Image 1: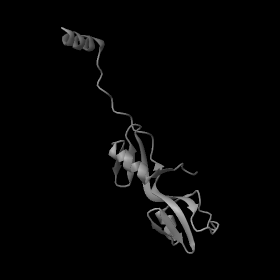
Image 2: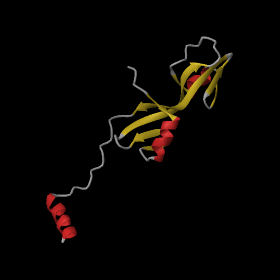
Image 3: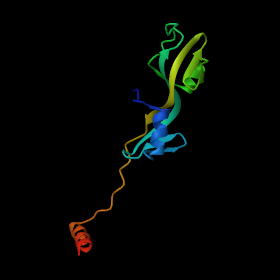
Image 4: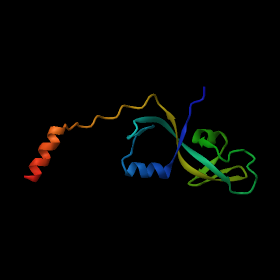
Length: 125
């Protein structure tokens, strides 16, 4: 059975990391708000044939890990990829494979109505 994988563009991960929406530990990514965990690998999303060669390799629209690209003798540099005589525009990032069920969210401190009323009255008196 195939596992649904998710592609995370590098630019999006950079933004989420700055906003502390994700936690990266080694080869694991956790979406903090959802508790979802992913085993991640470096990958590229192949956007288009840049050389006009007709995409003979059939890669446009696909996500390939660096391991898969090494098997094809691909050379990747930032947003470009070369395989033999073929050139492609790519989006660097990571492919994530879900790991188990989402982690339960952390409980928030509960405040009862009496405490809220007391705080309100103290501020107003």
